[in-house]
Length: 120
Ligand SMILES: C[C@H](O)[C@H](O)[C@H]1CNC2=NC(N)=NC(=O)C2=N1
Image (cartoon, rainbow, N blue to C red; front, side, top):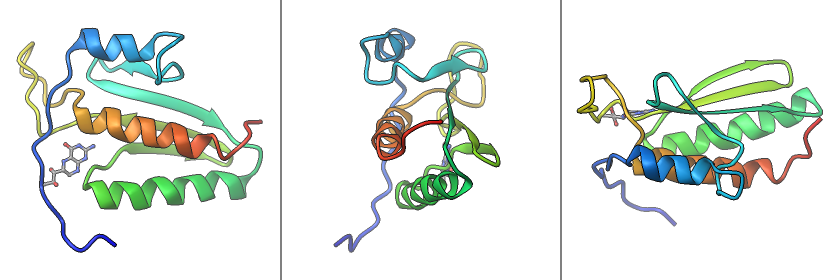
């Protein structure tokens, strides 16, 4: 069981590394780089409303565990998830967010959850 909460610093991931994960052969092939390459976005359509909220419940519980909270947009059986790390100031243009190791870790976990649901 988890009996301690440890705060870890997010580590910025290079655009090159992120892009390699998004390739057709990459583990995040279904994700997109958005918002001027500061966010990872995944869209999915579920067969039913119940499946949608079963999935979102898993995501919300994991977000709470990680202390890392995606922006979630949902309508009936459609879900859009945006992941970014606000705690990193991107050197490029001092944007308020960038993609970190925690976003990659969470995105991979989300792919595992999605394997449990057949899409529409
Ligand atoms: C202090 C707090 O844990 C941090 O600000 C967390 C909160 N949740 C977060 N969620 C996301 N998506 N990005 C963050 O950088 C982030 N930071």
